[in-house]
Image (cartoon, rainbow, N blue to C red; front, side, top):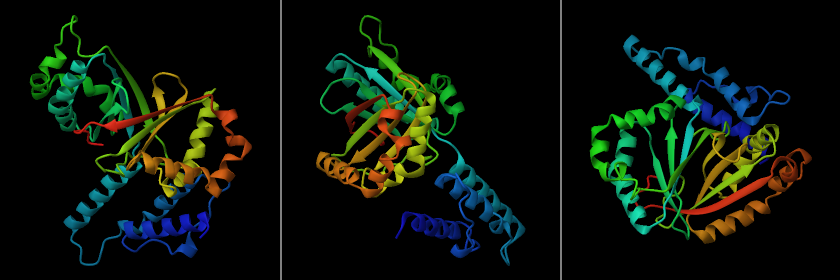
Length: 309
């Protein structure tokens, strides 16, 4: 089945389920507008087909109807909302610092972050090095990111459980340095996912730097309109895609993949590289790496045993 037809069929099926059978038949779906991305097209279909689901079901009470409408509005808001990702990099210098960090993260930080609505929380080590330790936080809004420090400072359980780490003296610091990167989820993958949970899973963290904001947006467009779908189909298992709003080496985008093991990573990247649709997409002059990228950072990470991702 051609990709176009597959997407149209998927849209029709998914929307029919969401609207309890009130969606249009596939033949009645409106055509994509000139220049309209796949993501924008799907969102327009969702808006067009939201109307019928607001009708009262025969025999449904007024209270049940209002409750159903409230649930639908909440679900729609959650689906359309942009998530934000905070990636922290903790530089440490000794095994003692790492042990202290693990105790703090497991017993104090993650429980408090979850209480604050920040979940899941990922903690990752470099594949073969001591430092840095990476911590991935998912925020449902920018307000969550902006207020997190203050909210944690008012959490007595966090302050007590993490006292040794939080109150470490200057002569024996808990870590050398911390850096923070704030990202907005891509339109083509608006939510963090956890597609693999194998004990030996391998994470790949990649950052693409661009020579200008315009070219950076072009690379994001490439992912949103086609490349994310190719990733999924060839087994590259995305966890998130984020446009960096604040951090180092801007403009850039960062994404994370996960595999069951290194062998799967190697095999699936090979499959991706030989994929006909990827070859066609990457051969387009407007998406050529030499035009829209000026640097790539590639890291392999393994999760802490208490990581929620």
